[in-house]
Length: 245
Image 1 (cartoon, one colour):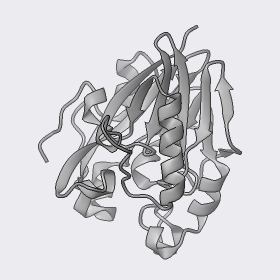
Image 2 (cartoon, rainbow, N blue to C red):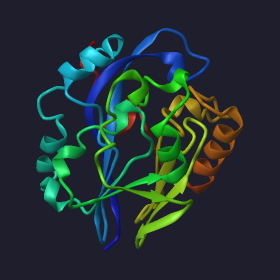
Image 3 (cartoon, rainbow, N blue to C red):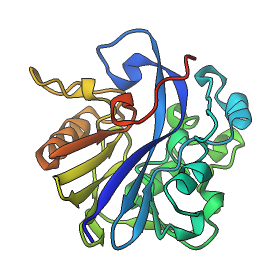
């Protein structure tokens, strides 16, 4: 079958806009986006943040919010799936807002993360500890008890669906290229968080990046591959609107 990609809103949160677009100022409500890939296998890219009450305790400034129907299990049900139908989960990276809710899936699906990301997230530098829910803070990151499969570079997950490294935002960030009827759709995640990061009349604008040089190269790789670009925190690709936080 020809693969398809459906982005869905899995909640929203407040964030300093310069984290998304480095030249911006102020605070915006950003969506937490998950992507359902229907191909020879059913693949989910990212799984969103955790229960709202837990996020309020761990990350209160973000004011995480979910409307009815934005729970991950509700999203899958709306698309005609149960968690047991998901063959694989791809985590673009291990920031807390991208990798919760893995307990829905049990031990059935493969869970893919780039090896560089996994190795760093286990014991990050203190300045990154909060975003990774590091054990050094007395927390347990949501992926820690999951049987994660590390990827070493570009990997075909099934015909027409390829995970590829896009480091910069984090040490081992990855994106996913999907060969659809319209060409190559790239699930960029936080390699390109919004359309504002890639203006038509100028060079790419980075958001928060652990490595500016790698981010620049990754953004270029994403744009070179993509006939259709799906950023990580862009309302324009979703059939949803901000809740008004």
